[in-house]
Image 1 (cartoon, helix red, strand yellow):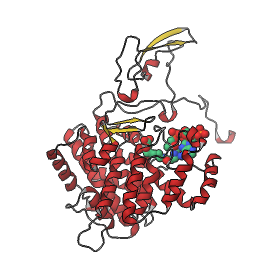
Image 2 (cartoon, protein in one colour):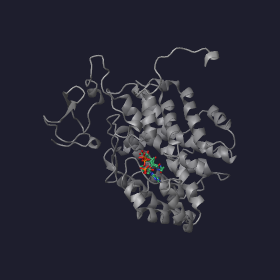
Image 3 (cartoon, rainbow, N blue to C red):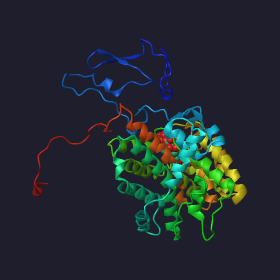
Image 4 (cartoon, rainbow, N blue to C red):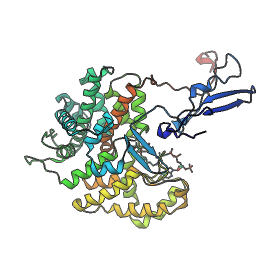
Length: 442
Ligand code: SDX
């Protein structure tokens, strides 16, 4: 029987014996369950019953550690081999040769754009970078010390009230304009949040600038007439955006798909993705890495910290991954991009701690045995700090490019005939039917 790997869309040739024969020892009955794309359909288990009125078997998979929720042709990951491809293009080649806007087009439309298509796309994104003036007031309503990720979460959700046409998810033209609006406005909202917590006036988008340069301008422009980013920094930022654009069915993408399955508008669905990404185990890890490196403070303190990890009192943030049981290919690329940035900004002293921490961890059986390697978040924070960003902005820097992945996955979900509103089942562990007791008798 050909073993088809669910990760590669079932390239193997199906044969008559592509079935699972299960015997229910409670009844002695056997069942033939089809295997396709390396999976069995959970609904095929429902026929396995002990009595006619039995509900039938379900699968139980907390955190969906072994459950495929959809078919997707957007991103391919091989966690053991450390492979990451967007629409079949290796991430290493895209980081080397492409730009974030070109990669966003690839994720959304499935193919690399021609020059004419890229010119159209770039023009559309550029023309939609402004937000409604009332959004400025909305962002201005947050406390001066509000976490920018919470501000972004609120602002993107608020966009659904400015674009009620977003609810027309069955209309391809509506889906396309919401896609363009989200990708183009995310940097503007992120920069407004940053300027708010800095107590500085907002900087409007500059349509003469490329996507990363425009973002840096909205973040850092002061009294100069025209902001000019160092091309090494804007290129490094563009590479970071490429690396963070999509990552198949991660926590935040699953949130976008699940919320989107109720047929709500994409702004509300992407706001759910931002909420999930905010968590320290997901996109908030880059912020947690910097706080961890600062807490370690010196290379001499690393052995004590490692002992803390082994005793369960610490977590080595930026290490480990649900899928990668090898070095995250994005971490390798970010590590080299960091050197380019440090040429401009000067080396981040925390880099020495990070490099020594990685060296020790990669030689320690505790981490090797658990297949814990640096992930995308381990080095990215060092670049963001070198760019002068406060740690609270780090997950926001993740959300900006992940918007193209979220919206590409949302588009795929809205057009997938197998999908409907997400509604998992449960194993009920609570009390069963009991009579109400008056308060005097409790
Ligand atoms: C991202 O899914 C994606 O694709 C996400 C992402 C994307 O692009 O969307 O790649 C982005 O979120 C990267 C991950 C960023 N998070 C962190 O760096 C936080 C630290 N790492 C973890 O908490 C953890 O590794 C996860 C959450 C990333 C993965 O957790 P899993 O797959 O649920 O693994 P686990 O928690 O079951 O851990 C397995 C074992 C456990 O040991 P035991 O209890 O079996 O003894 O490894 C240990 C864990 O305690 N472990 C760690 C560890 N990560 C796992 N121990 C110390 N330090 C760590 N970082």
